[in-house]
Image (cartoon, rainbow, N blue to C red):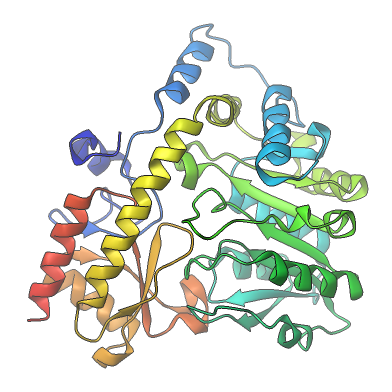
Length: 387
């Protein structure tokens, strides 16, 4: 399933946007947006086809399709050790929108929310869009243990939200149960809400293990709102499907109101919910094979990066992106991005504030959810560009 011969590059050149094959000039290899080059599991497309054959595409339930909510509830219980009733799971049209809904629900103008640095730009974007203030907490790549006592010093009377990204994009850190317990206790102490973005939680490499912060105890679960999606694990980015889960009934009702689902202004696509249900119920075999392939690609990618003069990359615990430090090359992140694009015909994501925060400067991010042949060609070009 994850061999080079299974990738249809002609289709990707017409459909894979967001900095990928359909967005870059001909001949450029895009190791950019975190989106697989591989086809999704067959069961997913078959579920969509089966639903579509009836030729009825009616309005769905504002709260989401019961089958999807029940599958998601089983997933949380069986895979994350978190008991959340189906009624407290809200399908949304992407994990990105889920992050925005949480910020819209729990932040007012002038409120502060703590985010990690570096981290995906969607946290800062969502916070600032609703009038909040993003307060960065530095977690450099390779940090073995995070001292959240330093984070506690950032908390003020205006702080309302702590944004947890686990595993952490772009560095790939997977937080330990001990770290998460400390963070959860700080949130309880200061009566804060935890936004736990777990979209990468399926992509974790042994011996690292993922722990959902809501699984630690009932008190922490009661203040946690979990956001996740299916683009990273199952290759469904274009279907725009994610979910928001809150065990606290009051929190869930507030999230539902702020989602605007009840007014049909927003809502999760019914076909996308059908696809996600099939992914959760039938596609564990596909995901397991995908993670095994990614583990091999991670090792290959890190080895190749560290062989380039001036590059240094710590193997990520999770995510299928490598975060390489390039400060020894004397080039900035933007300069390195331009150099690789022009001289090697390889596109990467520069460590700019607009993508990941100020802590990303001096780094570039490369996505390795492709074949070994694509990666080998990309690194061959990069190495030649530096000879």
